Image 1 (cartoon, helix red, strand yellow):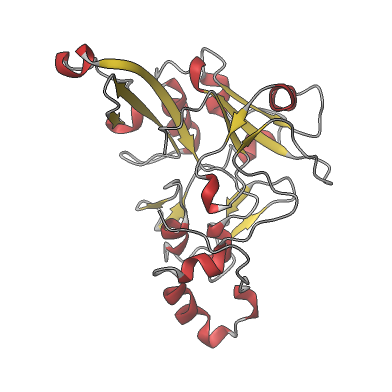
Image 2 (cartoon, rainbow, N blue to C red):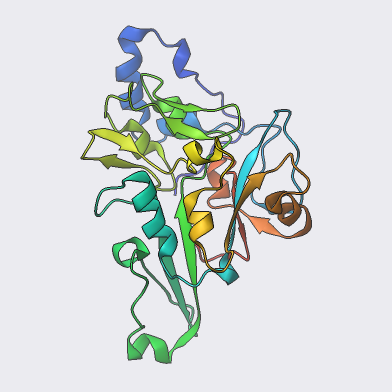
Length: 267
């Protein structure tokens, strides 16, 4: 994991003339130069672990909450996502990981076919020394400071006013710079359309007043989605009253996908 240099000045890719833009992005995608380009702490951002949410001054501010203790690794969420969003085989907008921690502190992680069909039983050797095991759903974190937006040379990746990080496939040139820039491995190159792809939190459904399809498919309520500016929404109540965490707080992207009961072993 690369370390962030505190207080570093951030270069805005939009200030670079069009002739040198592509060369600049190529250099930025290698080594520590990427950090200069994409990671900038924000005063209104949330980092690390905590309770409570600072409301943003927009009409809507959506967030996603995942309760690790409630996830059973069934895989219905993955199947629903693939059907709703026409995700190609062997590619995933959301996926499940199984973490197994042994009594001596060893950590095993697997994700067979993204958790699409659930998980097979642990083998006898690992089962005999298992201390705890759990499932972790993952997807695009729809960051406050998304690296993918800043490295896109044509502006195809962008943030909506509600905070969704989206891809305009009509303008995407398939360079996959955003795929490389995402610290969560949440983007992929969709070979069927020749474009970058990822979870959109089912933006088309949210616009119609529905929840993301994976939320509706979850049989245990492990996945929650809603408007943080609505005090009666599930996510607003959960984040106001429970301890939460985000993935990779050290990269300062300020995710808006929050986890409840997230063990420190999760990466």
